[in-house]
Image (cartoon, rainbow, N blue to C red):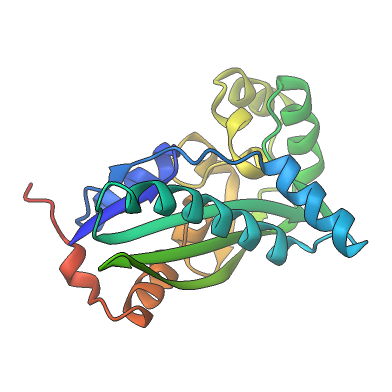
Length: 213
């Protein structure tokens, strides 16, 4: 069965490959800030993290699925979005070294929660069916991370384009003492959650395996 990952995230692609899936890739054409602003304005409230990431995951998957439907695509589309919450504050991608440095100094010795939204769409016979959910994992950072280590880590640019300014599967992993929850959630998406959603749509997870190496 065909699989399309509605994401440009190298981490999500790596996860797919690790579990035997070589997906087609498609970049969602979604203005994330505009989507959130529109919904919050219409509902006169600030979306909590779980709703925030789920909404964006759904919009991303839907955008790609609608385009693929016009091409006659038959299979599964997977969309995702993540954000990190620490002490009631939401952190997305820091983008700049200054913000990444500030966040790491604030995260030392503390525990935050990574919220990851998942949306899976099945295209079959011209129709679309949906399944979606949010996974969460708590992350505890080492208390003895030095300013020098933070500066050296930020200088690699790795934390600039990831939610929360950290990775668990690369250079940032040595600064993390504990992860409670599905570890893949912290990498980019919860594989156990995606498997369950795929099965809710009537597809066996192993039917998606298409890597031969």
